[in-house]
Length: 630
Image (cartoon, rainbow, N blue to C red; front, side, top):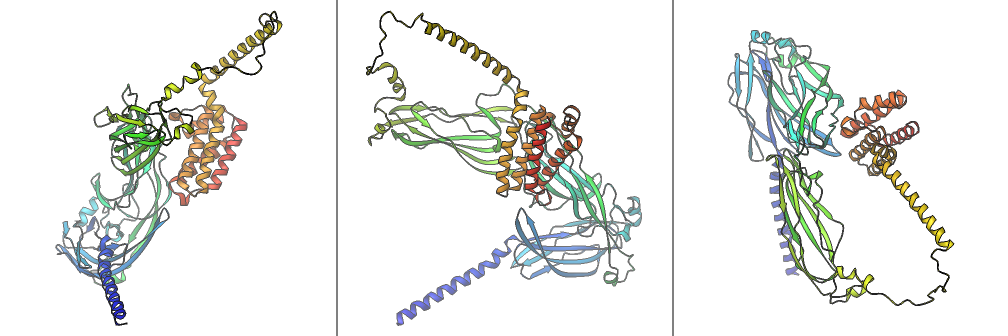
């Protein structure tokens, strides 16, 4: 009993030690994602109060922070620091995140005009020091503010960027908010990736957006990039300093050559103008002169961005499958000795950076003695500004059927390197394989003969004949079928059959040569097949994939039905073709284009777009009506 009590006591002691060790590690883990920041206006008016914030944020609970203010210079402190805590909950693609914060706020005013440097402040959280960034603020005199057009945003701040009492600003100018689509390249090869960023530049506070319309990105294969790690920045445009933020970012792969346009993005921004009564110089101004907020709607549109896409050089290598970027290819075989009728595989690993989503598998040729099965693909990819990086693996399973010595030729792969402007060729080594006799007797069950190759087996049906048995159906002498009525009738029927077959084949070849007619006839069938795939995505609740497939069905149907190639397939062309040449009512044509617009909007903003079931039923109904009219 004493030993049992001692054993239990030891277990409790060990458990307490482990719990204590975990508790000591917990604060460090909780503080691992802490970020600190400092915010101040870009410009202030000399002698007018403005706000400076020092903020720490984390997705976990933040322990008590020890705040060390910066070494102030050129500023008079009116009040502060005022400590406040907050919590923000956000949801993106169904994932909910909670962020907690501690903020220290100062109200200060500039002693004189000029550039004021605000050094870094220090926050000690969980025993670790965090330093904020260094800020610069431009202090303007009254004359300087007047020369810049009413102050030009004399108190632009991240949270409170306008002080109307200081600069008389009561409306938003055309240059206060700018919407831009910026690309990292304006000239690329077809298939070469480029990054398009939708950015907003502001000198006023933005409360939110309405009537959001993202560009359609026609002519590009687009892959959206994560912008959660890209915070606010400061940028100078046209001599003015702005707060900048990346709203959306796409990795684009051009699918055709020529000049492609990235259409306008259109937003309605809700700008907040904060006005405050003139300061009297009393410290009580901070408590009794409450600011007044005015919301102003501003329509924004980004300029159209043009990208010149160059065609890939010709002639293209025979083994070129559309890969553009920088790649490396390795190949391995699962062994060099196999028993007959056993399985093996050749694995190709393609790694590098480029248009991985659009690359087709390399081709592999095996001798006739090898039975090849469907290829398996595996990939580990990541989206970067240089393109899609990572590794793509192609596995080619096979079964060796006949014994012998074989040399499996190496796999060839060509890709286009945009940096070098030329094609590069990769080749794996040849694989020497020995196929041994199947000692298990498995070949007999398959009708195989040991020691005979697959090529030899093909001749068994022609060089060995069996003796005919049964009734030979011999014809008596003098009653030959040749030159009989039956022979002539058979001859005429064969000639007629030959002529009919020839006419049918000529008609079929003529019809197939008319590509436009073939596409027009098959437009409905192809569209229904795509709608069927879209319905599968709808049933699985995959909204983005559903609307992407539904748009392919609608655009593909209209392009095939109206015989319009992809390069010229625009909404205006479709409307004119349907109404003027095909006799479709304009209301019905605009209903079709409206459905496309709703699907494009829902593809990028599923929560605010059209319902999947409603869009699917509308597509079926419109295609059915078009089939009866066109």
